[in-house]
Image (cartoon, rainbow, N blue to C red; front, side):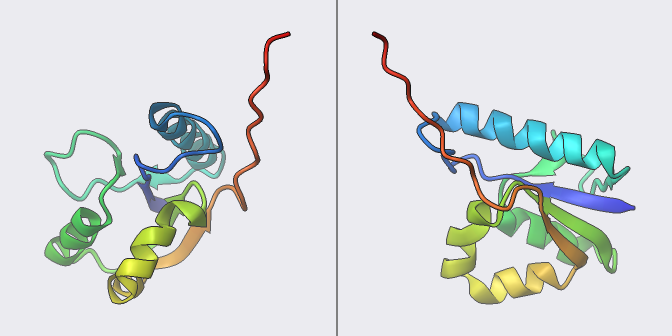
Length: 118
């Protein structure tokens, strides 16, 4: 199975900083890709990572590459793409059309509790 990972570097999980949130997104999606034997699709030979962080860039690369349908788009959660979907619903639908399946690794982000020192 072949797939592409889309992460959101601006998404905050609970009270975590964005750097910690993107690290968690990477860990969770990488683990899922390994467990399900999904090999990452590299559309651009110059891309630095095996994942995307900009939906517009992913869409542009899909249009230019003309790869046909890819098995899956892997997201940490649907919450990570919510803003893009709200602002650009037509582009989100077009993006979804390139994939047989959209996979949200987590159904919802668990709350992160900040513990106070006693």
